[in-house]
Length: 306
Image 1 (cartoon, rainbow, N blue to C red):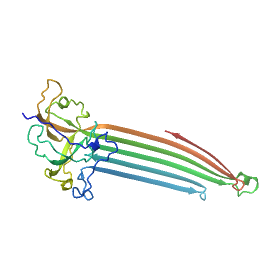
Image 2: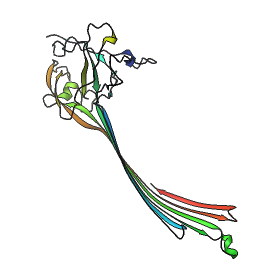
Image 3: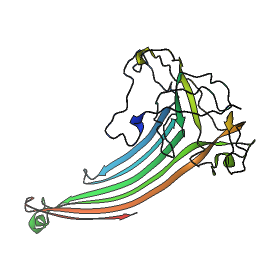
Image 4: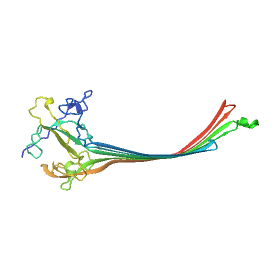
């Protein structure tokens, strides 16, 4: 039996001790035409939807000295982010979201010759879906009245001019946000024991995939001779099955040989937040003008019930 060691090349720039260093990037458009192509191939996507309804009714009386307004507003917003190559990990990792590596393993885990030796690839860990939606609803009723006594004869004209306004406002906000991750499960072997990872949210069980983005690069003399292609793979879906190599290292007496088995992609709810805000507000204002508007008085009060 051939013993194999899996090597994964990483850049020192990605390590936490490399303070002050900027990670190298590909600037040669012959290597990859980043101005006209998206490296992800469109497999990452974000969708946003917004719907709104606004209604208002106004009516005045008595030469605009008395009036009412009734308004209604409803808004719905939903957001979905599906980032397969998010680069997110549950444990310290040098994997960035589109880092490019080169396969240097001569053999695979089962001892066979690595058919992808020398090819560039990128890898993912913990593909995540983020969902959020919010609903806002507001009902507002406003009434106002104005009385002007300054046009009267006699002592009543000294009572001045007055404006009175009343308000009722009912505001409701409901929010829901969640994150859905993907992890490995299996019906053919005990994956929790093999990986020493239970439950499915354990940091050793997120879906991890590799996709190759070049031909064999061995023999090239310069990075400028490399040619990278877009990522071209279907996004894993809940229920997809793959053949994986594994070794059971759960105990000293476990079978530590390389075996193969079927693993299943399971999408699970990682976290969810639900919120609701309800505010009922009432307000009253009384503004008065005396002595040809030289004296102005204002009284107002507002109460909020949250």
